[in-house]
Length: 305
Image 1 (tube, rainbow, N blue to C red):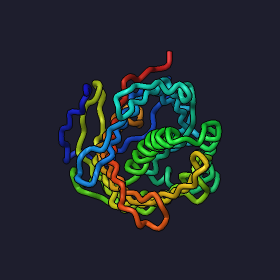
Image 2 (cartoon, rainbow, N blue to C red; image 1 turned 90 degrees about the vertical axis):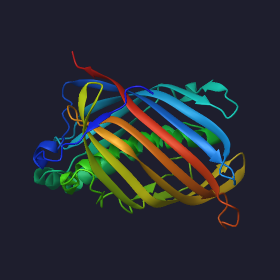
Image 3 (cartoon, rainbow, N blue to C red; image 1 turned 180 degrees about the horizontal axis):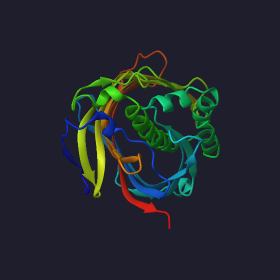
């Protein structure tokens, strides 16, 4: 893959100069490429079959919600292609031209923290899931929809991860120092979104991040971070082809992520995840193991005319 990040360490830079806030007034949108590779491992640790999802999408800043620390964001899906285990490529046109929205935030200053503590702002950030519910209510309850579900949560999840990391000032004290991001640790997330049963949830484990240094990507300065989460757990119930299914398990993930200094939005992300799951509520069956790799990278920043 092209456009790798070049990282250089800069431990002596004053922390206040490292803080990145949203600055997207002149940005029309940013274009991204997304790749997810899923490898079902067998009992011997070998590959039990690899399948892949590739997509291109646009991230559009939809205005600031009354304060520079809160940014409305809209995601528009341009293209989506699925590659099956037998290497067949299928254009998933059912999800192309779909869109959904989210809310990003930055609480790295006292002024920002005071604004985010308002009930109205908390309600605004919490309301981001309404567009996700609406989106999935239009899609069929099929196994392929679960893959799209992971795609949507990756996009929002990685942008939200940046929001939380940028809001943690101790992370800048020493390059490479691992810091617990308390706002992400043990955080609970509703995964139902008109696809799974109510009560389907994902509970984050302890989340750590470290500031690696500054770098360049596509000729633009980046703040580069490493992250990891230890033993998140999930529980999902759903109906497929008249069968009631329950799945629970654990997830371990880690990766590298960068934020574009000019705009304050995602530049690049690469994540590896190991998922151990049981397909019944008794957990008597041997756990299935899924190795998942996600790559998200900006391909273009389009300024307003």
